[in-house]
Structures are given as structure tokens and as C-alpha cells.
Picture 1 (cartoon, rainbow, N blue to C red):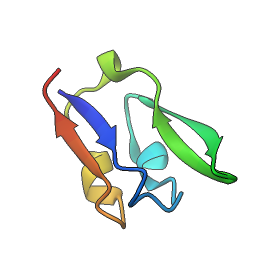
Picture 2: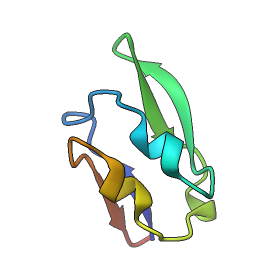
Picture 3: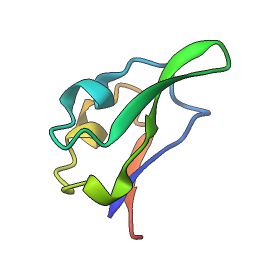
Amino acid sequence: MYPVIDYNKCTGALACYEVCPAEVFDIEVLDEVKKAVVASKEDCIECEQCVEACPEEAIELVEG
């Protein structure tokens, strides 16, 4: 499993980036806002910290 971000909900809080112990996320500028992007989904340890930390509930773990 790995995280998928719904960018229609994401506001760029970067909470997922900050809490991820596996460093799955990078930061990129999307629509002129710094947002986290999944850079290394294979490194995900399925801890769900990113899902819990996201204030907009914009992240879910999916099979893959």
C-alpha cells in the first residue's frame, strides 16, 4: 500500500511531509502552492501517519 493525495482537497499544509518516517514525500509547487507529492511510494511502511496528520483528509492508502 502507498499514499495517494487528492489535490482537489489538498491545501498545502505539508503535514504529511513532516510526519512521514519513511520520507515518501517530496515538495513541489503545484498551482503556485507548495504541496507534498508522493516521490517514493515503494518506501511506504503503511504506518498511516500521513493519513492521520492531513487536516483536509486528502490522503488515503491504496493497494499497489
